[in-house]
Length: 177
Image (cartoon, rainbow, N blue to C red; front, side, top):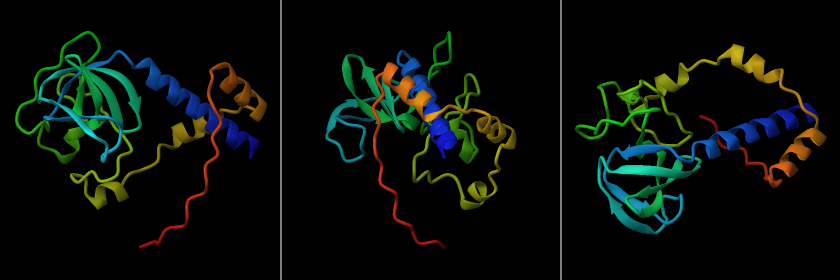
């Protein structure tokens, strides 16, 4: 139990550091839309942004990014931003903002073939068969099992890095198909 808690804490810290390390990223808007006041679909809409408008990513939160678009700031969905590859500008997106012809190509940039993924519910272009046929990377899963810290080590690290503990309620069991 303690080992799993430690692994979970370490994974959260690694993800937190990865998000904050990316704070100065640049990109282009894939499609026109509005900057949102908060990272939620029902948040107050702010200033409009145009397709192909350059943005600077200030912060990431789940599937949302806080951007500066020519002095205007707000939240947009991560999938609406094409990230700039290291050391180069991103070419403007043609058409509807979905490069290539494959449904999975919405996750791939043209310039570097980098893949971006987020845990966003409701991606319409991926069919159920693709999701059902996904496979586990057992090498990485085994590697994760080798990471071991005690609960005290995890708490000490969290304290040093000003991370706060949160209590989460268990989800109610859903209906299966």
